[in-house]
Image 1: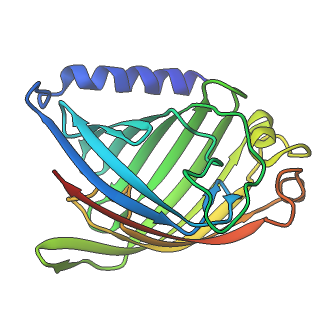
Image 2: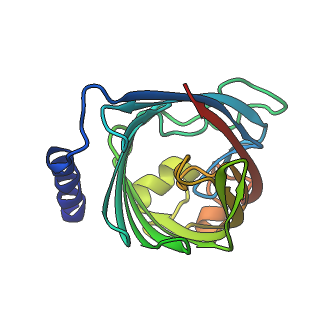
Length: 248
């Protein structure tokens, strides 16, 4: 919790010292995101696909954005260190915008999360990201995750730069978080899930945090997590993600 407080205070201080804030800086982007299913931290939340309209608004600073139901800010300390913070106003993740080819699964109580990220980067080669997420409303639990992304190469197409990459992640939460997400029978703080995949990013037009194409395999680990009441037989899965956006 002390780390959370220190990180939060640091992120609050960064806007004050930044020189890029301007009342005239106000840009917007729109687009759509395709998801073959909904999943979060190894748990499949909806087995049908979604095509979701998206919007992003830069709020007086190029690194301060409202993206859907999340408020995002990032600050680059130097070429090798980046801090991110995000307020997610709709963090349950199990409520599709509309039903497609699958029935609804377990519905969790709506909640909000604060997420903090520290990225250690080698420019053009990838980064290691450490995440801490704190629930703010419903269960008050926390979740941590480490994710590594390795850029394979880069190429240009129609004036844009693209980065194919491979990635892997490992994460786990405390009992309050795990019981909320996975259900009764979950264990206390332990690793609960991992993912592996390939992605295509388009920096600097679109932050690598939001890949334009991604293929991901995810799986729950640990007997307690895999047999928790919300999971059933859905302890692994595969997701395809596609993102298209343009500035107005």
